[in-house]
Image 1 (cartoon, rainbow, N blue to C red):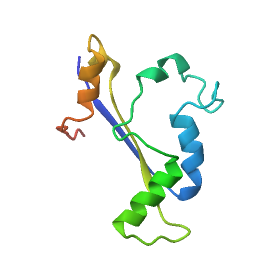
Image 2: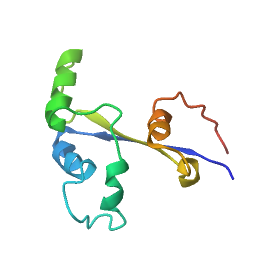
Image 3: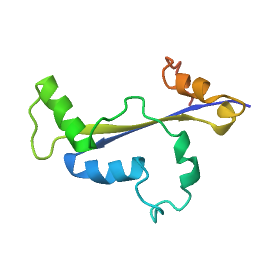
Length: 111
């Protein structure tokens, strides 16, 4: 059975930092927007780059360090999800799964 890498990238302005932080860090007990979220499995989620402070502060620091100027309507960050089809993860240990996100991907284009 074919296995696929799943990559999602979404541009955001600064106003969505707090809501995304609450969502990604699973700070709610239930999610009306997606009732399929299984909080018990959240312990398996991990950051490629671990935030050391609130998302908004991280974003602001990185923009400042890069010497960028922003406007009110600027894209401030890109939310990224990297995963794979469920069969890919079967029988793999946590270390192998973490290495998945650090490996270069070979992308193919299908029509």
